[in-house]
Image (cartoon, rainbow, N blue to C red; front, side, top):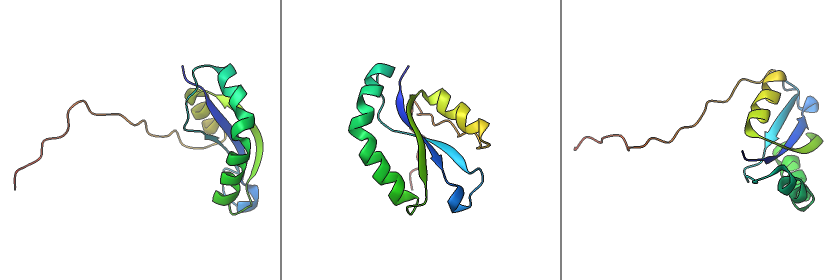
Length: 98
């Protein structure tokens, strides 16, 4: 199981519904402890990124380590749709010769 840095974003000021949602980092960590140790190192970068992407109107309410399944569950509880799962095809699709 992989762990990711998760951010609870409050976007109430932006006028979106649902007003809250969890963002999940892209860097996987092998353990929750390893992930927790990295939060201080990445927190400023994450804050700047959220500020930029939310035009300075999003507020980080919480920054913790979560699994992908926890991220999906937490967002579903806030009313977000479950994301489509991405799969990698074993064989590339056949291409017609033109």
